[in-house]
Length: 436
Image (tube, rainbow, N blue to C red; front, side, top):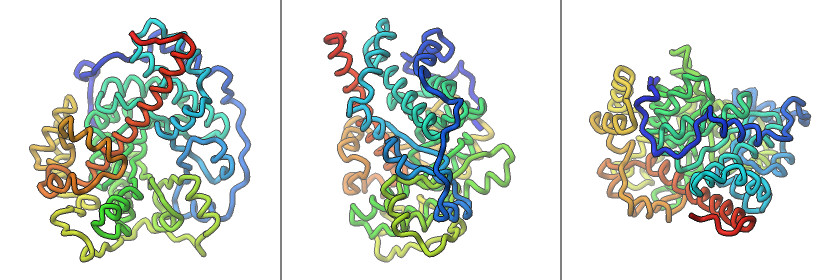
């Protein structure tokens, strides 16, 4: 794993130190009236889910909506995944307006931009605590998107989140160079990390080998949609193939290295058939709509697909020399060499990791986009328009996995902006304009 010291981690600054008096005050504040000592009751399990768990899969729900969870929750489920988009849905309904204003009164000495980030931190923590209190399960909680490329800020805020609910919170950290380095340090402190927005076996191979996150993801539904929505092929089984390939790589580390604790999550599921096709993966996280569909259309029996190697009929696709689909499920010699190099000579910062990847010829793993390209990606939402990126992909300067990771970050940043604007609006209603 990466070995860093706090002396060589660059940062944009403007975050609260985990052990400062203000951090302690906010921790106490966010815990107010939350009871984590009384175990919540859960409905008895159902044979449908029990049989799926018997294939080796832990079951989570992919939502922060309490009402949606309650309609499905039982003792077969053990985790919830939230994100800034899901939290933003709750915030926009006005559920947390009073909490926003009360938090703001504690932070009057901070500049507005930092105040807004801190309020967003409190919202994520408070909502996560409400979920823990109600369902008594593991909950993945999100950091502010401003910190996605900031190693020091990620570490500091992850420590704070973990300190609020160490027995249940899993901190979501994005799969960026800074996120990888931060995760390596956090895992040395035994802080659980869900490394998010992964789309390929090679991304998760790198993350598992170098940072040992608690969980890695394949957002398989988005992979299939990228291919089909852009009319590059039918997209059938692309995400599933990448998920199972990633599971195999993660499992190799788990068997070979006693300290490796990484588990694979199958995420972004779109229908009940996809659940059946990834049965046996370490963790399956389902949106409520998909869980309901599984209930309505259960398979005759569950069979583990953990060792399945799905075949993609690439004769129906745009030339693979243009798409480089193999990067989604294959580990190249260059990526293996990069991992070996980084284990022997851990990078001191994110830039060194990026340069090491380029030196090994893995130029498409951590692409460097211009400001205009980042803006274009943000406009395209979660599923980018392939025509705008096909030249870079064909040339090896970009790949489907790294493009979708950046697109996912851009989408979450948009949700974060909407959430931040709601915070500012709520502050303004209570105090008048707070802008400086």
